[in-house]
Image (cartoon, rainbow, N blue to C red; front, side, top):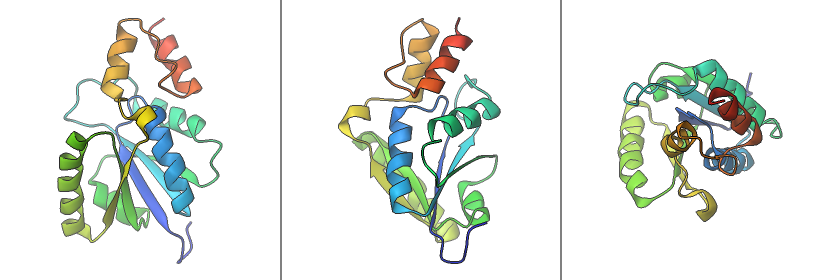
Length: 163
């Protein structure tokens, strides 16, 4: 368990599938905090999941294995409840475009009002700004190659799923 001065960041999302933009945010966050908790969830607002939570956890764990301060969990609660449970001092969200900002800002403000926990919004680098899990799912469903957009283990699982 984390010590009293350990700075923990929570990076929540559906991660279906986990892609290189997500990985970039985890890697950058791991340099800023003592521990990063990556939390995958089933988003009820999204259509049927491509991968179940267990598969997503395994893919994220494999993709972040080179980072010594990352922990992977699943959750089915409010993000602020999970943040309190893991003793996070911040929630981290990635931004791809200005359109993400409005939604993430509103959630950050609501989460702060509910819990007092700040949200750190990290813009992705230009190389990953176009990536979205829904686009990767669509490309994969139609037999396209997504290997340049996702970590190798995720690419392998996607190929197996659509073989």
